[in-house]
Image (cartoon, rainbow, N blue to C red; front, side):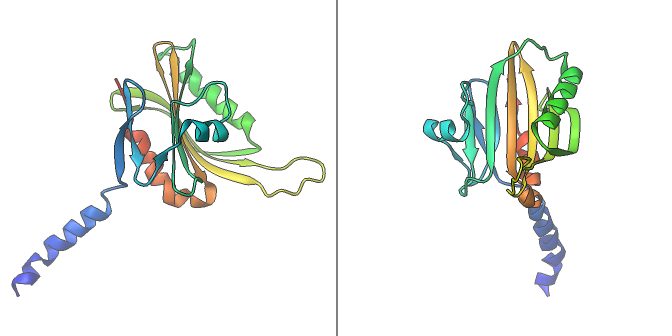
Length: 184
């Protein structure tokens, strides 16, 4: 009988835990940047980054899930824009994303404040189709959440990407990761 008195409390506690959100580990990336990295993700070593992201400008960090199908990356590059140019940057990066892929479905395009810092936010599902004559490769679809921030003369790009068919699983995690970014 006494146990029944605690049943509503136990149900409320269970409901709160169910909505507690994904488990993220606060991780420093660079001198003044930290973000939550999803549980189970591991930092790629330099040779892994070079193989997966061949570029003259190596990302500051790349974290990948155990299967290697889902990535979280942080890049830094010089920029002539300032943090007063976010409305323009939103238009430029949206157009750039549209030019990169065969098809883009935007879920969100916004300027948002996270931990007292403004970010340009693009959340979308991209599709790349094989347009070669006689090409018969299946389209590649990805869910991507990207946030851009300017600090001084540097542009920081935070990207979370996953296969589009896994979007329902990864979208809440991507959103939590992006909400965890702290730039000092």
